[in-house]
Length: 328
Image (cartoon, rainbow, N blue to C red; front, side, top):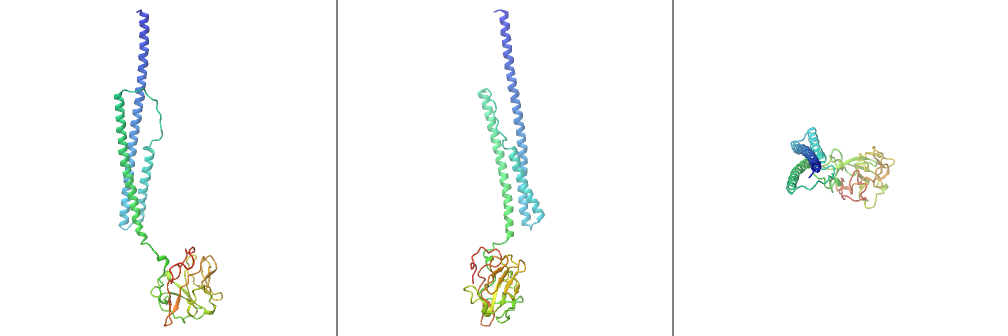
């Protein structure tokens, strides 16, 4: 072989070797960059996971502290601070979780030449180990999140006791019962002949002068002028007629009786009710008549209730059909 051919072959071999070396260096460089990027991401995720765990733990402690403070009698400022810490810990922790522990984008990388089986097996093992580590870490953080949420919910459930017992049907009934005598604010029973025509007095059920929802207005009118709805003819003995004193508009006390118009009027919003016609609304924003109390005179001449008001007293019941309620 001539020296010229030999030099040419050596030159070609040298070029190929340099090209292969360049490719190898490029692969090593890219692998090093990838490893550095992965390492930095791992450190960032570890720091984020540590902060998330800390925030969730603080939230759990704040929820428990809120429960303890409430159980010991409560302190508004401290309860507010603990509530803010509990909710803030959960919110910040979820924010960090979404920012650092979820992938931001999908990246498609060039396919490298297939590696040897040994290298592939090693990389696969590393990927599996990293995936197991992430699953374990996120499972731990999920449990902390559930603990923080549970502590907060428990702390919120216990103060419901402060609302007191369920009212049941207490809002539908008053203290009036069959046979209870009508008494004035001093507890003195009222007789059927106590008032003169157009006389007015505030009455209560005997023994319940402190029951605000049971106060009523007793008015004495000429029985011949009454035009009560059907079924109420025996509710006004000797012209004594009794209506709830609580306005059906906003709950103000209906204490004004206009003798010339035979009307009970509310001083708050000027609702007016016809005394002779079952307290029907004749003016103002009241949505329904004043409930009428069925009364009668006993053997001694005292006025007594035949039962409770036939419908709930006060505002908020304008959607109920007339006559629906507790009944006599």
